[in-house]
Image (tube, rainbow, N blue to C red; front, side, top):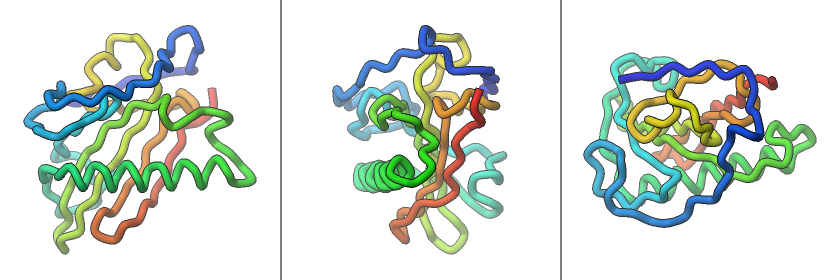
Length: 164
């Protein structure tokens, strides 16, 4: 199931920015035995995700090492952006964001993960974030996503949502 959520602005009063670092083996994510942080989930790629992966991809179950590499690449991207001349995150910290990892394997064998990041807002469509992919229009830098190529050890396609 896919949830669409439209947010006009990221209101400080509606955002929970508590750091979530506890590890858990059992996650609300479907079919995973991974050791994920409370702010992480793995969601299988749906059949309609050409915007993230192009054509001819299939879902796969990532390993613990895949998630750790994806997290490392996410951190590299975030740190590069906040240290640039234009910082789209304006003082936000990476640990404020929840992450949805959506893995896919490409026809040529490359393993990709689309990482959807957002600051948790306590509203109904977001409450199912561990099982439903969030698609958000606007919402400012409380929402961003990027792609990581695990096979090549690269990231690309960073998209920070428009400012409120």
